[in-house]
Amino acid sequence: MADLDQAPVAPRGSLGGIPVIDLAGPRETVVAEVAAACRDWGFFQITGHGVAPAAIEQVIARARAFFALPRDAKRAHLRSRDNPWGYYDRELTKERRDRKEVFDIGPDAGGIRAAQGDPFQGETPWPEAPPQFQALIEDWFARMTAVSATLLELIAAGLGDERGALAGAFAAGHSSHLRLNFYPLGDPLADEAGAPAGLGVHHHTDAGALTVLLQDAVSGLQVFHDGQWHDADPLAGAFTINIGDMVQIWSNDRYRAPPHRVLAMDRDERISLPFFYNPAYTSDIRPFADDPHYRTLNWGDFRRRRADGDFADYGTETQISDWRIAPAR
Image 1 (cartoon, rainbow, N blue to C red):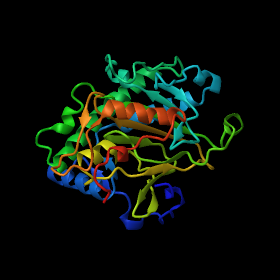
Image 2: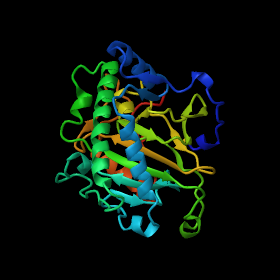
Image 3: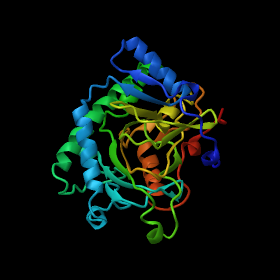
Image 4: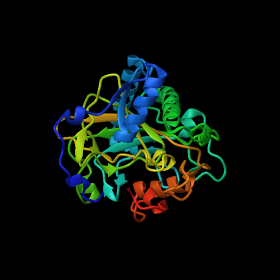
Protein backbone atom coordinates (compact mmCIF):
# COMPACT_ATOMS: atom_id res chain seq x y z
CA MET A 1 0.00 0.00 0.00
CA ALA A 2 3.02 2.29 0.34
CA ASP A 3 2.97 3.29 -3.35
CA LEU A 4 -0.77 3.93 -3.64
CA ASP A 5 -0.42 7.70 -3.67
CA GLN A 6 1.64 7.38 -6.85
CA ALA A 7 -1.04 5.36 -8.66
CA PRO A 8 -2.82 6.96 -11.64
CA VAL A 9 -6.14 8.78 -11.39
CA ALA A 10 -8.92 7.31 -13.52
CA PRO A 11 -10.84 9.54 -15.95
CA ARG A 12 -14.08 10.76 -14.41
CA GLY A 13 -16.94 8.32 -14.93
CA SER A 14 -14.73 5.36 -15.84
CA LEU A 15 -16.04 1.85 -15.01
CA GLY A 16 -19.51 3.38 -14.79
CA GLY A 17 -18.59 5.34 -11.67
CA ILE A 18 -19.11 4.60 -7.99
CA PRO A 19 -22.46 2.80 -7.42
CA VAL A 20 -25.49 4.84 -6.38
CA ILE A 21 -28.18 2.94 -4.42
CA ASP A 22 -31.71 4.12 -3.65
CA LEU A 23 -32.55 2.82 -0.18
CA ALA A 24 -36.24 3.43 -0.88
CA GLY A 25 -36.26 0.64 -3.47
CA PRO A 26 -37.57 -2.93 -2.93
CA ARG A 27 -35.72 -4.60 -0.06
CA GLU A 28 -34.45 -7.61 -2.02
CA THR A 29 -33.10 -5.29 -4.69
CA VAL A 30 -31.42 -3.02 -2.16
CA VAL A 31 -29.80 -5.94 -0.30
CA ALA A 32 -28.41 -7.28 -3.59
CA GLU A 33 -27.15 -3.85 -4.67
CA VAL A 34 -25.46 -3.20 -1.32
CA ALA A 35 -23.81 -6.66 -1.41
CA ALA A 36 -22.53 -6.08 -4.94
CA ALA A 37 -21.21 -2.61 -4.03
CA CYS A 38 -19.44 -3.98 -0.93
CA ARG A 39 -17.93 -6.83 -2.95
CA ASP A 40 -16.84 -4.80 -5.98
CA TRP A 41 -15.99 -1.37 -4.56
CA GLY A 42 -16.46 -1.21 -0.79
CA PHE A 43 -17.71 2.28 -1.65
CA PHE A 44 -21.11 3.57 -2.79
CA GLN A 45 -23.51 6.48 -2.49
CA ILE A 46 -27.05 6.31 -1.13
CA THR A 47 -30.22 8.24 -1.83
CA GLY A 48 -33.67 7.58 -0.36
CA HIS A 49 -32.19 7.72 3.15
CA GLY A 50 -34.96 9.88 4.62
CA VAL A 51 -32.81 12.80 5.85
CA ALA A 52 -34.34 16.11 4.77
CA PRO A 53 -32.29 18.57 2.66
CA ALA A 54 -32.92 21.28 5.28
CA ALA A 55 -31.18 19.21 7.96
CA ILE A 56 -28.21 18.66 5.64
CA GLU A 57 -27.90 22.37 4.91
CA GLN A 58 -28.13 23.28 8.60
CA VAL A 59 -25.41 20.95 9.80
CA ILE A 60 -22.96 21.92 7.04
CA ALA A 61 -23.55 25.61 7.81
CA ARG A 62 -22.92 25.00 11.53
CA ALA A 63 -19.69 23.13 10.83
CA ARG A 64 -18.52 25.91 8.52
CA ALA A 65 -19.30 28.51 11.19
CA PHE A 66 -17.22 26.64 13.78
CA PHE A 67 -14.15 26.38 11.56
CA ALA A 68 -14.46 30.09 10.70
CA LEU A 69 -13.67 30.92 14.36
CA PRO A 70 -10.16 32.21 15.22
CA ARG A 71 -7.64 29.40 15.68
CA ASP A 72 -7.14 30.24 19.37
CA ALA A 73 -10.90 29.88 19.97
CA LYS A 74 -10.89 26.47 18.31
CA ARG A 75 -7.79 25.33 20.15
CA ALA A 76 -9.54 26.11 23.44
CA HIS A 77 -11.35 22.78 22.78
CA LEU A 78 -8.24 20.81 21.89
CA ARG A 79 -8.38 17.03 22.14
CA SER A 80 -5.67 14.96 23.80
CA ARG A 81 -4.31 11.43 23.78
CA ASP A 82 -6.59 10.51 26.69
CA ASN A 83 -9.68 12.34 25.41
CA PRO A 84 -9.93 12.01 21.61
CA TRP A 85 -12.97 14.31 21.37
CA GLY A 86 -12.59 17.93 20.36
CA TYR A 87 -10.54 20.05 17.98
CA TYR A 88 -7.25 19.12 16.35
CA ASP A 89 -5.22 20.49 13.45
CA ARG A 90 -2.18 18.20 13.28
CA GLU A 91 -3.66 14.77 12.71
CA LEU A 92 -1.50 12.06 11.18
CA THR A 93 -2.51 9.38 8.71
CA LYS A 94 0.09 6.66 8.31
CA GLU A 95 2.51 8.87 10.24
CA ARG A 96 2.15 11.83 7.83
CA ARG A 97 0.46 15.10 8.74
CA ASP A 98 -2.81 15.80 6.94
CA ARG A 99 -3.79 19.24 5.65
CA LYS A 100 -7.03 19.57 7.56
CA GLU A 101 -8.70 20.61 10.79
CA VAL A 102 -11.12 18.34 12.67
CA PHE A 103 -13.61 18.48 15.49
CA ASP A 104 -14.46 15.02 16.81
CA ILE A 105 -17.73 14.33 18.63
CA GLY A 106 -17.83 11.31 20.92
CA PRO A 107 -20.54 8.73 21.70
CA ASP A 108 -21.84 10.97 24.50
CA ALA A 109 -23.56 12.98 21.71
CA GLY A 110 -25.77 9.93 21.28
CA GLY A 111 -26.37 9.52 25.01
CA ILE A 112 -23.74 6.77 25.37
CA ARG A 113 -21.52 7.32 28.40
CA ALA A 114 -18.07 5.83 28.84
CA ALA A 115 -17.98 2.68 30.97
CA GLN A 116 -15.20 1.59 33.29
CA GLY A 117 -12.53 -0.11 31.23
CA ASP A 118 -13.35 1.71 27.99
CA PRO A 119 -10.18 2.90 26.20
CA PHE A 120 -11.52 6.47 26.20
CA GLN A 121 -13.22 8.14 29.16
CA GLY A 122 -13.55 11.74 27.98
CA GLU A 123 -16.61 13.61 26.71
CA THR A 124 -17.06 16.09 23.91
CA PRO A 125 -15.93 19.62 24.92
CA TRP A 126 -18.85 21.52 23.40
CA PRO A 127 -18.04 25.10 22.32
CA GLU A 128 -20.43 27.93 23.14
CA ALA A 129 -20.06 29.32 19.61
CA PRO A 130 -21.49 29.08 17.05
CA PRO A 131 -25.05 29.22 18.47
CA GLN A 132 -26.99 25.94 18.74
CA PHE A 133 -23.86 23.98 17.82
CA GLN A 134 -24.40 21.18 20.33
CA ALA A 135 -28.13 20.80 19.66
CA LEU A 136 -27.73 20.58 15.89
CA ILE A 137 -24.75 18.21 16.09
CA GLU A 138 -26.54 15.89 18.54
CA ASP A 139 -29.53 15.84 16.18
CA TRP A 140 -27.22 14.92 13.30
CA PHE A 141 -25.57 12.21 15.40
CA ALA A 142 -28.98 10.61 15.98
CA ARG A 143 -29.86 10.78 12.28
CA MET A 144 -26.57 9.18 11.26
CA THR A 145 -26.94 6.44 13.86
CA ALA A 146 -30.31 5.50 12.33
CA VAL A 147 -28.96 5.53 8.76
CA SER A 148 -25.94 3.46 9.84
CA ALA A 149 -28.08 0.84 11.61
CA THR A 150 -30.14 0.44 8.42
CA LEU A 151 -27.01 -0.01 6.34
CA LEU A 152 -25.51 -2.51 8.79
CA GLU A 153 -28.70 -4.58 8.61
CA LEU A 154 -28.54 -4.57 4.81
CA ILE A 155 -24.88 -5.60 4.86
CA ALA A 156 -25.62 -8.36 7.38
CA ALA A 157 -28.44 -9.68 5.18
CA GLY A 158 -26.06 -9.85 2.22
CA LEU A 159 -23.54 -11.81 4.31
CA GLY A 160 -26.17 -14.29 5.52
CA ASP A 161 -25.77 -13.22 9.15
CA GLU A 162 -28.82 -15.07 10.44
CA ARG A 163 -27.58 -15.02 14.04
CA GLY A 164 -27.29 -11.24 14.13
CA ALA A 165 -23.62 -11.14 15.05
CA LEU A 166 -23.10 -7.77 13.39
CA ALA A 167 -25.97 -6.12 15.25
CA GLY A 168 -24.91 -7.88 18.44
CA ALA A 169 -21.52 -6.20 18.31
CA PHE A 170 -23.29 -2.84 18.80
CA ALA A 171 -25.83 -3.93 21.41
CA ALA A 172 -23.75 -3.07 24.50
CA GLY A 173 -23.50 0.59 23.45
CA HIS A 174 -21.71 1.39 20.24
CA SER A 175 -18.57 3.55 20.20
CA SER A 176 -19.44 5.53 17.08
CA HIS A 177 -18.23 9.07 16.60
CA LEU A 178 -18.91 12.00 14.31
CA ARG A 179 -16.19 14.12 12.76
CA LEU A 180 -16.34 17.60 11.30
CA ASN A 181 -13.60 18.07 8.69
CA PHE A 182 -12.32 21.34 7.29
CA TYR A 183 -9.86 21.38 4.39
CA PRO A 184 -8.34 24.87 4.09
CA LEU A 185 -6.76 26.50 1.08
CA GLY A 186 -3.01 26.09 1.35
CA ASP A 187 -1.28 24.87 4.51
CA PRO A 188 -1.67 27.38 7.35
CA LEU A 189 0.47 25.27 9.69
CA ALA A 190 3.42 24.66 7.35
CA ASP A 191 5.75 26.96 9.31
CA GLU A 192 4.45 26.03 12.77
CA ALA A 193 4.53 22.28 12.10
CA GLY A 194 7.98 22.39 10.53
CA ALA A 195 7.09 20.60 7.29
CA PRO A 196 4.34 20.92 4.69
CA ALA A 197 1.41 18.50 4.51
CA GLY A 198 1.04 16.82 1.13
CA LEU A 199 -2.61 15.73 1.07
CA GLY A 200 -5.83 16.66 2.81
CA VAL A 201 -5.91 13.09 4.15
CA HIS A 202 -3.36 10.49 3.14
CA HIS A 203 -4.58 7.11 1.92
CA HIS A 204 -6.05 4.81 4.57
CA THR A 205 -8.91 2.46 5.34
CA ASP A 206 -11.44 3.21 8.06
CA ALA A 207 -11.06 1.18 11.23
CA GLY A 208 -14.69 0.53 12.18
CA ALA A 209 -17.69 -1.10 10.57
CA LEU A 210 -18.86 1.55 8.11
CA THR A 211 -18.71 5.27 7.46
CA VAL A 212 -21.56 7.56 6.39
CA LEU A 213 -20.12 10.71 4.84
CA LEU A 214 -21.82 13.99 4.10
CA GLN A 215 -19.83 16.12 1.65
CA ASP A 216 -20.39 19.72 0.68
CA ALA A 217 -20.34 20.60 -3.04
CA VAL A 218 -16.53 20.64 -3.32
CA SER A 219 -14.80 17.55 -4.72
CA GLY A 220 -11.64 16.05 -3.24
CA LEU A 221 -12.44 12.53 -2.02
CA GLN A 222 -10.93 9.65 -4.01
CA VAL A 223 -11.26 5.86 -3.67
CA PHE A 224 -8.68 3.32 -4.87
CA HIS A 225 -10.19 0.70 -7.18
CA ASP A 226 -8.65 -1.63 -9.78
CA GLY A 227 -5.25 0.02 -9.61
CA GLN A 228 -6.48 3.60 -10.00
CA TRP A 229 -7.82 6.47 -7.93
CA HIS A 230 -11.44 7.36 -8.71
CA ASP A 231 -13.07 10.67 -7.82
CA ALA A 232 -15.98 10.28 -5.38
CA ASP A 233 -17.65 13.52 -6.43
CA PRO A 234 -20.47 14.82 -4.22
CA LEU A 235 -24.00 13.94 -5.32
CA ALA A 236 -26.51 16.49 -4.06
CA GLY A 237 -28.60 15.06 -1.22
CA ALA A 238 -26.70 11.75 -1.14
CA PHE A 239 -24.38 10.22 1.45
CA THR A 240 -21.14 8.49 0.52
CA ILE A 241 -20.65 5.12 2.21
CA ASN A 242 -17.58 2.99 2.69
CA ILE A 243 -17.13 -0.21 4.63
CA GLY A 244 -14.37 -0.43 7.22
CA ASP A 245 -11.88 -2.93 8.55
CA MET A 246 -14.37 -4.70 10.85
CA VAL A 247 -16.67 -5.59 7.93
CA GLN A 248 -13.63 -6.90 6.08
CA ILE A 249 -12.90 -9.22 9.01
CA TRP A 250 -16.54 -10.29 9.46
CA SER A 251 -16.76 -11.09 5.74
CA ASN A 252 -13.44 -12.96 5.83
CA ASP A 253 -12.11 -10.78 2.95
CA ARG A 254 -15.22 -11.28 0.84
CA TYR A 255 -15.64 -7.52 1.23
CA ARG A 256 -12.53 -5.33 1.36
CA ALA A 257 -12.28 -2.01 3.17
CA PRO A 258 -11.28 0.37 0.36
CA PRO A 259 -8.26 2.69 0.60
CA HIS A 260 -9.33 6.29 0.13
CA ARG A 261 -7.80 9.74 0.45
CA VAL A 262 -8.62 13.44 0.19
CA LEU A 263 -6.68 15.78 -2.05
CA ALA A 264 -5.26 19.03 -0.71
CA MET A 265 -7.46 22.01 -1.53
CA ASP A 266 -6.02 24.47 -4.06
CA ARG A 267 -9.18 26.25 -5.30
CA ASP A 268 -11.93 26.03 -2.69
CA GLU A 269 -12.21 25.23 0.99
CA ARG A 270 -14.05 21.97 1.71
CA ILE A 271 -16.28 20.70 4.53
CA SER A 272 -17.21 17.07 5.16
CA LEU A 273 -18.89 15.22 8.02
CA PRO A 274 -18.05 11.51 8.31
CA PHE A 275 -19.96 9.41 10.85
CA PHE A 276 -17.95 6.37 11.91
CA TYR A 277 -20.30 3.56 12.97
CA ASN A 278 -18.26 1.49 15.39
CA PRO A 279 -18.97 -1.54 17.62
CA ALA A 280 -19.06 -1.54 21.39
CA TYR A 281 -15.55 -1.39 22.82
CA THR A 282 -16.02 -4.83 24.43
CA SER A 283 -16.88 -6.53 21.13
CA ASP A 284 -14.67 -9.31 19.84
CA ILE A 285 -14.60 -9.35 16.04
CA ARG A 286 -14.08 -12.61 14.17
CA PRO A 287 -14.77 -13.86 10.63
CA PHE A 288 -17.98 -15.66 9.64
CA ALA A 289 -16.10 -18.59 8.16
CA ASP A 290 -14.82 -22.08 8.87
CA ASP A 291 -11.43 -21.07 7.44
CA PRO A 292 -10.85 -17.70 9.16
CA HIS A 293 -8.26 -15.35 7.67
CA TYR A 294 -7.95 -13.40 10.94
CA ARG A 295 -7.48 -14.05 14.62
CA THR A 296 -10.18 -12.69 16.92
CA LEU A 297 -9.71 -8.95 17.41
CA ASN A 298 -11.00 -6.92 20.33
CA TRP A 299 -12.42 -3.67 19.00
CA GLY A 300 -11.51 -1.55 22.05
CA ASP A 301 -7.87 -2.64 21.91
CA PHE A 302 -7.68 -2.03 18.16
CA ARG A 303 -9.35 1.39 18.45
CA ARG A 304 -6.92 2.51 21.15
CA ARG A 305 -3.91 1.56 19.08
CA ARG A 306 -5.24 3.20 15.91
CA ALA A 307 -6.09 6.40 17.78
CA ASP A 308 -2.53 6.66 19.08
CA GLY A 309 -1.25 6.55 15.51
CA ASP A 310 -3.69 9.26 14.41
CA PHE A 311 -2.99 11.66 17.28
CA ALA A 312 0.80 11.58 17.20
CA ASP A 313 3.70 9.45 16.10
CA TYR A 314 3.61 6.72 18.75
CA GLY A 315 4.96 4.11 16.34
CA THR A 316 3.71 2.27 13.27
CA GLU A 317 -0.02 2.66 12.73
CA THR A 318 -1.96 -0.49 13.63
CA GLN A 319 -3.63 -2.38 10.76
CA ILE A 320 -5.87 -5.45 10.65
CA SER A 321 -3.07 -7.22 8.79
CA ASP A 322 -1.47 -7.56 12.24
CA TRP A 323 -4.26 -10.08 13.02
CA ARG A 324 -4.11 -11.94 9.70
CA ILE A 325 -3.48 -15.68 9.88
CA ALA A 326 -3.94 -16.50 6.17
CA PRO A 327 -2.14 -14.94 3.20
CA ALA A 328 -3.96 -12.06 1.51
CA ARG A 329 -5.75 -13.16 -1.66
